[in-house]
Image (tube, rainbow, N blue to C red; front, side):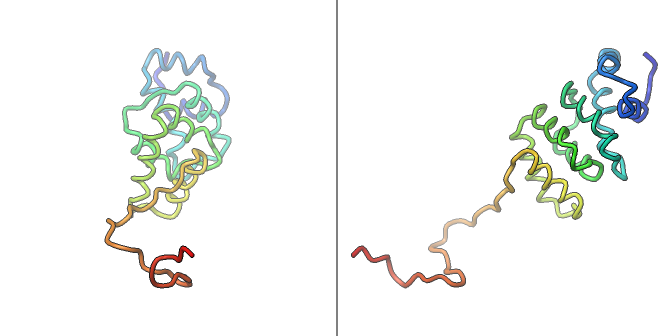
Length: 163
């Protein structure tokens, strides 16, 4: 097999010129990392590729599940600006390949990153949507007594009546 760049392979896959048999040969000859790099590159382009150019690479990622050497948090972060949010295969690939708990933890940690812009936060929200992950709740303060009354609370002083 001739050596091709990840970008060239991604374009061949998106155009429908490369099918699973070609990708299996790539995996056999060059390993999972080469296959992963070629398919995942569809989700790291800036500006993002259109939906049609991400669909086939997403299908093959989900179907073949090649593993990259990077941790899932780094991979999700790398995809935030380049992922077309309507391509559901990418979040499902991460869930199936790395496990839902690892993906949840990665997204929760990325949510805490103050350097992320509005578009990146929208992408994180969309990961949560596709994977049915609730937004992480802020950590509760230690219990330091009763909670203060809020707004229009109608509670009166003292314990409730038992009569």
